[in-house]
Every structure is written in structure tokens, then in C-alpha cells.
Image (cartoon, rainbow, N blue to C red; front, top):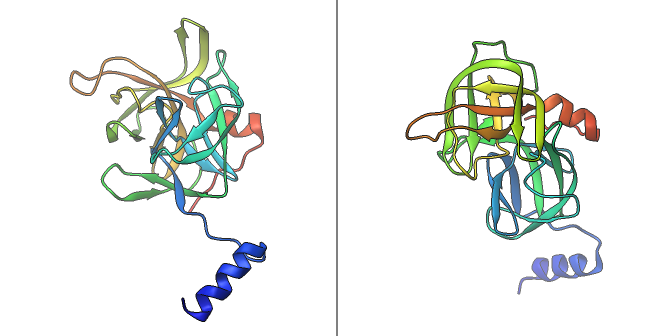
Length: 208
């Protein structure tokens, strides 16, 4: 072993330097709570946001590669549908979203898109899909109760896409919390807006 490698190994062992995180946290990538797969919404300082019904507070989370990723810190559902995960030192949150084709889309901010705008979402099942923002302040009723203040689009989604981000010109609009139909026949999707999630937990959205 080279002298430099020996020195670095010794310093790591003594805790004098920190090894770089091995994996990236990106919007649209898969994560797992047990055997259930969801999608990362958007990276924030210390972790990422997603839906509130992908796991309960205290749940252990693994990443797209099934390697330990972190812990669910808090959730709200119903009423709203939001949650966030704090990641461990092996993961680095980045202000980007997967485009589903091996590339990335930069996150610029969280400016609201107007109704009628062309928006796109990223999900770990069906990748990058685009359509139109149809309405805001929509309510959707689940068996557990009603969620208010959602965004509705005509973009399709399928199981596993839940939690992924809705984007408009680099601005995160929200995270996917519900859908009708599928990506063969078409459907509608519903999103928890991003700003209330950040405000509820005091989080900082990461940009790039």
C-alpha cells in the first residue's frame, strides 16, 4: 500500500478526516420503507421531503440501492400529506432532480407556476412525464381522511412514483401524493405544495 493510502487510512481511523458521502440524494429517485417503494420529492439541508404516507416518524429508510439511508423525522397525514427524511453520512443531498434518462434537472427554487403552465414530474417508476397544471387548492379524500390544498395536473403516474417532485422551469411545485388512472390509459395526479412542507419543518430547499 502506498504511503499516502496508509496515511489517509490512519487519519480516517482516528476520526481526523471524514470520508466523502458515497451516494447522492436526488428528487425522483427511489427510496424504501420496508418493502414499500416511494420517490424522493426534493433535497433539503440534511435530507429530503416526500409524502406523509410513505412511512411514519421513526421509520428506517433505505435508498434506491437498498443501503441504509436515514430515518423519517416527521409526517402529517391526513389534512396535509407531507413528511421528511434525515439522511445519514453516506448520503449527500443535492439540488437536482432525476430526468429519468440518466441525466439531471437543476433545482432553481420554489416559485409557483400559473394554472395552465406546462409542468413535469419525476418518479422512480415511470421517470420524467409532462403535462398541464390544471388547478390549485384541490381536496382529495383518502380512506384515512381528506387532504386539502393540493395541485392537480393531467400527468399520469403509477405505484412507486408517489413522493416524487412536480417541476416548472427548475422550480419545485410539490410532491406527488395521489393519482388516478395509469400511464397507459392516462390519468390525473395530485401534489402537496412544497412551501407548506418547508415551513412546517423549518427546512431549506437545496438548489444548484
